[in-house]
Image 1 (tube, rainbow, N blue to C red):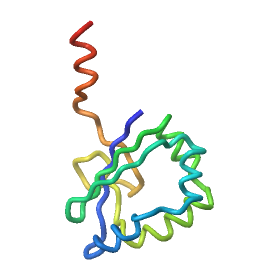
Image 2: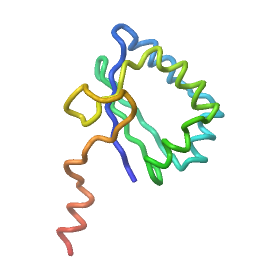
Image 3: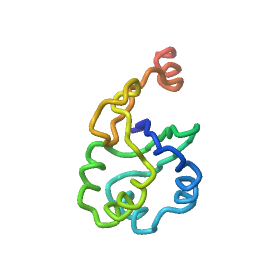
Image 4: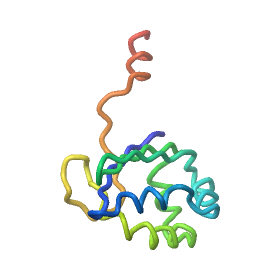
Amino acid sequence: MRVALHSVLRPGTELDYDREHERIPADLVASFARVGIHEWTIWRAGDRLFHLVECDDFDAAMRGLDGDPANERWQASINRFVDHFIADGNSDDGDGSPAALPEVWDLTRQKRTATT
């Protein structure tokens, strides 16, 4: 499954965030593999971050990372830069935790349904 996320950086932390993500810790990479996260790509536009996560089951992966020591260390470090996640893609209300954006359209799905 693919999940898109949208988060917002704290003002003035953009370059530090980029530097911090040059390489994430190996134990966090191993934790991602253990919970079924196969790929995580992040794009930045100003203070806005857009994530694409390829995983088996996003909610299960987030539960699997809850309490994981590698993830807890990473969150303690990276949260210096990340202000919050946007809950539904349209508003800044929410509890600040990752929430999937609603999918609007998918080219592959359209092609598949057009040929059936």
